[in-house]
Length: 585
Image 1 (cartoon, rainbow, N blue to C red):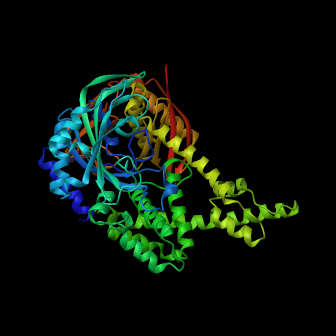
Image 2 (tube, helix red, strand yellow):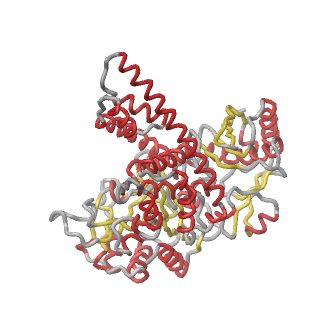
Image 3 (tube, rainbow, N blue to C red):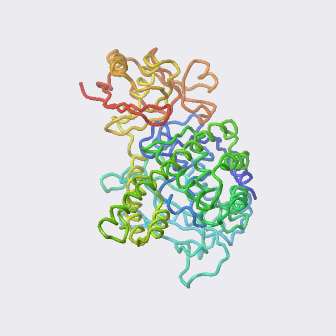
């Protein structure tokens, strides 16, 4: 069964069961401080999981484009991906455990045709904070999973929470038995030997954690996630996602073009190229910070491995075209963005080739100094610094060092890389801690302030100025917008003065529900029109601003305090960034 068929079956099944199909949000989140990219299906639904009414109702389903950056360096093995698609269904205070499990079992066994005996499930075993999830286990048994294939684990495996506090609850995970022999008598779904593969996770948000204590939520939610690439791999009886129709045409082409074939390098090129295409299509651009840096890193790593495969880099546009054509049914929007995608990725590749040349020059300086000191070894810190500062690949440093009669110890370099990865991973996890718990009075105020800033930019810079992204925390706001020049001090002051004028006027912030086409006709602006459902929420601030937005916002602008720009800088090519704070008056 092809990936597109799995997706269509999923959406139609849940639509038949009373769910409204909502569009995928873009990879680049709008007004979400928690992550650089959309990392899960629940992320765009945070306000509704917290109790805000969704315009499409209490039962929702979608496919969500996702990108996670923790394991970039692991890509190249037989399973890791940065970009993936998550299928999900939600109950916002409607059905709960029994019906959720009944539908999951029916979809897996009847719609996908997975034999019941190939399915094992896990449930929360309980602890001093929250009781054993007997209800979930009984629901699975009632559906058709025998007790011997129902396992109980603790919070580390079967509990979900975003951060240290906020909505949370037990989850139940479904595993597919690949038919491989057990690695031991104790082999079960928690084992990573490859016999059991997780295919679906249903989270039951029924608690709220605060100050280490758990209380029951008034609105209980269900949040599920099923990975499309993994399911396609299993249903097609393939060893890896790279053997499915999602990747195979590109993998085959890379093998054809390679003069020095290496399966790991081909996987890295195929995966990173697809991820880069998806990011650029959704508005991402390479830069030295945040999501722009992630895109730059993906393109550079892909380029290095094209070099390692000894593939002519002039073939890159051809590989991009092949990717877009391969993914056409899954993501038709790639077709209209084809030329922009090629321009951005090829330009970044060209810049990186200059970086490689610069790195080689720096390496030559290093070995000249070492020769003067009669040192015959390039230390690991130098190799790592060449990579971190110039993007110079350690394997290239190693080759050059040996050619020049120097020793290297890549084990020591690996240790530095692992320390670097751990710091990055911790940073990423910290960033995700915003999640459901980050929404508070201050972030709501900053969210409203972005609308006023957007309106002020149109007044000062011009009507063609549009939002390109934002990031909000309790301490500050960051706002990206298209602009072809660095703002002058005069322009920054005009923007500040306008925003503060509108704040002082204590304008009403009105919220309306209306049809999407009516909202656009009325002049409402939005960042990604395709991400919104047929019925939308429109926020109007006086006669100053009118935007499609999920909210929430303050009711009167005077609640914002005093707006102050603290920094204005380049974000990426053609995009500027303003950092601002709200001060008490």
